[in-house]
Length: 427
Image (tube, rainbow, N blue to C red; front, side, top):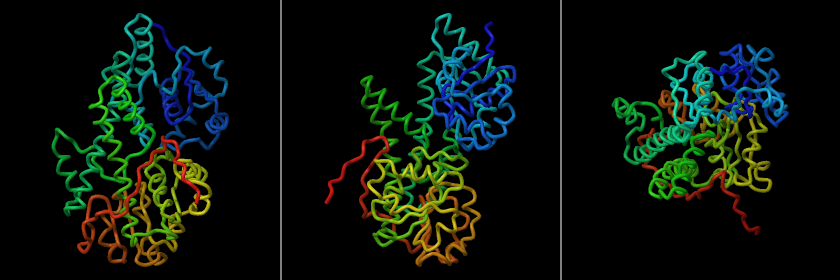
């Protein structure tokens, strides 16, 4: 059987970098070269400060970089030398979760390899299987035809996104009835037919994969004349958009129907904890909605650089003119962000937000001081926070007995980072 000795990966991003770093570590006899046209990104991979944050990644890279793992901009040379070329690992769909990517790569639920039925296609499939067999049990390596492989990737992410949108839809009902969505999720999650994974209500899913893959599925269905199927999956995206708009409306309504010139602390900008990735983060959407109402945002995230936050909020579909420079401040720590704020909004479930000194924060905030917990990270602290004096609003639960069921009077329009910006007439 043909043996792979040299691998080239085109694309040194969130998928290619970690995946090929783990392959290099697990296959010391294979030379792995990751190439990219972005020289700054390649320089970062070759430095002590990697271009992405992922728990355990730095240790993996340092264990084999310069030995059998290389990062380069010499794309043509790497392709010519390679026995196998990954194009951002699309030849074999990845099922990684950011924040646990290294663990997922070293101990995967399955590895899926798709190829055509030709002798050359099957030869390539067997060769790639042999690479993964260095550390993955054979029974976890699944081989399919190319269409099955690609649709499996889209369907897996669509099913996960669907579960999040489903529980988020129930969270709205819980707020209106007095139920607690966490209790509902726990009750239905104990049913073995359903299971308890991805039943965490929140301000909405983000990241590079879920929305992209669901929309790819919608596009395929429309192109193949399956409009009913397309509409079904489009609802997953629509519900996610609704949850973000609903949460932003709740902030505005709770702050006496206006946030104009009010300071609001945004805690967390990454799309989830343990990553610095902000792609399609709900924080971007919440910030956009609040900026449109004139709120002054002070944003803190432990892993997202200031430059990335400013770049995301300066996207033409998010803000216009000098809106960001006027309304956005990046804070060095959460206490600075909350100093003098009318409200703090938790948009990312970083563990550190559970450990903050909320008595200190409350003393420095304007009164009444509000907490809007978009990730349900403070559930165990509600009684303590209320004693301190906070007004607490969270997803899928009425915290205060005095609080009336939420019904938004603030209409916030939909928007998408994928849509062209809407030009507003100058007055």
